Length: 325
Image 1 (tube, rainbow, N blue to C red):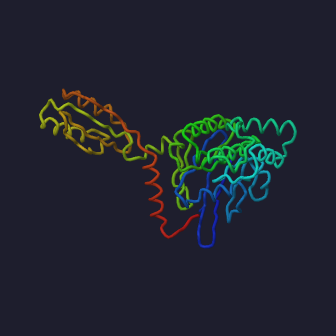
Image 2 (cartoon, rainbow, N blue to C red):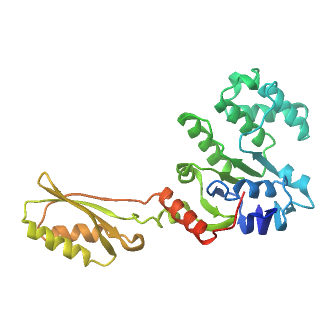
Image 3 (tube, one colour):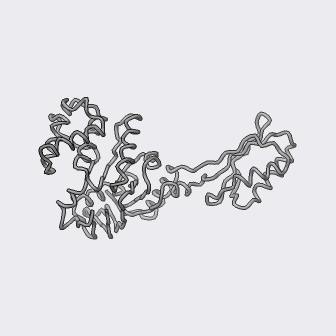
């Protein structure tokens, strides 16, 4: 549905996007991530035909973004960052205007306006000037405009920006519902959103792809993935605890032990795993085999924000001196 091949964009001395190659298939919800200035918005503007690439190619539904720009834009529903709107118009008015621009007339236009407004829950503000709407409702109007013509490809830049938790949940459910028949690219700074709705995550830094994996696979890169939080009763002597720690360190897959604490008759520690290996069963079995009382054992899943910082800061260090926009 979306193909980019060595896509590059240069603004004077600044390389905003640098030889970016990726493919997005129908049914995928792609989380497109990166720090500010990484090149996310520039990439999306090239894919949607609003910016001409300096070099490389991009196509949407088989249409080349340079030669068939209008065909590309017919296939895309685009929610840009900030969702600029005409403040003096009402949601109904701007949706009618967009329908005419999209070539929708009569009953078909009325039907599509009704579906879009219902999906994003705009019914009670349809006749209110956009300038008087809250930020959340303005965002909903922008989303309604993006889905109005039932596009094959949705490109959404921060779609839940300004929404309250309930509204965010509704938008995420809407994206999930539409994803089966569409290709969705979701640019966001909210990593929990990636975990909630995305089937794949592409991370860019300094205009280049630094990771392309499923969110679960990406999370496994975290240093604490599959780390075990262990609580053992201190009924035994401190010597037994020292022996236990020595035995745990010798287990296959154990990288080390953090934060050992003796408190209130319990011994607590955090057992780190080598490259996210599953060690919980072996650690628990070792405690039981030694006749000690296992009070608690839990496994950490790793955090996307830690992985995001590690790979984007690493990319920045490796490409120091090169700018992006």
